[in-house]
Amino acid sequence: MKKRRSRLDPTRPVAIWRSKDLLEGKPTDSLTIILRTRGCRWNRCTMCGFAAEGAPATAEDLMVQFRVAADRLSSRTRVVKIYTSGSFFDPMEVPAQVRERILDLLSGTGVEKVVLESRPEYIALDVVLDCVSRIDVEVAIGLETSNDLVRSHSVRKGFTFSDFKAASEIVHRGGGTVKTYLLLKPPFLSEGLAISDALRSSRAASPYTDLFSLNLCNIQRGTVVERMWQQGSYRPPWLWSAVEVLKNAPSVPIICDPVAAGTRRGPRNCGRCDRAIAEAIRKHALTQDPGVFEHLDCGCKSAWEKVVELEDLAFGAPLA
Image (cartoon, rainbow, N blue to C red; front, side):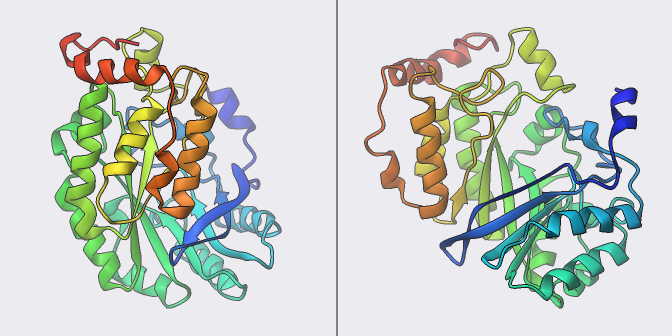
């Protein structure tokens, strides 16, 4: 691991890609930038392997990374998402002067909204006010679940639902909006409990949220979840489970990008229907129309229904 980290270039971002996102309820062009920072200071979550992407980037390095990424902006780009695999508001990851310079540069383009990620402890009113004074900002917070017991022991997130609520209120008071990440199927939850937890969490967090992002747990290297998966004690969620949550979540907009869908390490069904279900999930993210799920069917759906019904009786072992 140390050898791999030493080869990472602190002047090059982890990834850059163009896609589509919702802006005021309509699909628009977006650019996602993952900056290579020193990484998340918490770095204890059971499902997160992003720490392996970190490098000791200086303020100058980060600006070089951003300029490399900014070359991918087009005249149609309206949303820019800047991630660090940690917290954009953590001054040890992204110094204040870097944050200010990046937002100032984006404000001079046609970009209308910037999405930034942060843990609650770094979200302060003066920081939010400063960001919003430069450009419209949406702050993404990885709540994962409204259940403090699940978040503390299954995910090991290190903050409470009260911390999330307080941070969300600060963002709103400062004029920003809040995107809330929910995790479908944290470790140690059965398929049925995972669905119930995601739906319960969406209802509990909806008063504090402008947009939900349902993240389907996948197997990242070097994580607790990977070790459980290798031992046969964890299976990523069924895509049918994601559809169930998306169809029944509250009226707050909810998006989902089923990363690694259909692969061994990603959310999946039987293999035959994975591509169609994943495409419907992505289409729903841009339309918010549950009708995209109406005509989906596969023989594996009955197997999924049995898993949801019976897995709680399997003493923690995945049934499929």
